[in-house]
Image 1 (tube, rainbow, N blue to C red):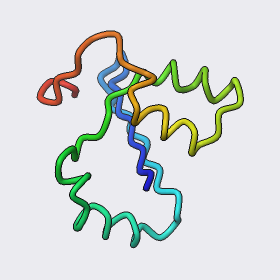
Image 2: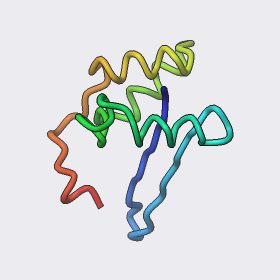
Image 3: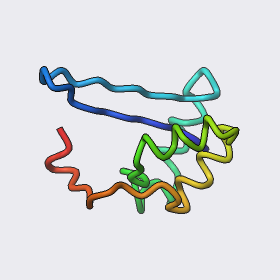
Length: 87
């Protein structure tokens, strides 16, 4: 299962968000979010450094490989993330 979301605030205080649901319909992903113990344990997912992920993608990593590596902690952010102050 791979749902990827990035949100970032620009210097002009505009919040940009990108959501990727690869299967196209979202039905399988919605079922996963409703029923998965893994999702229930960690609904925020793994925080990553987008620049590191982009570099890996440019180096040839597939979407599945990026997801596996990100989930394993291969692209850690430079600073600890606090979901209460992300935006």
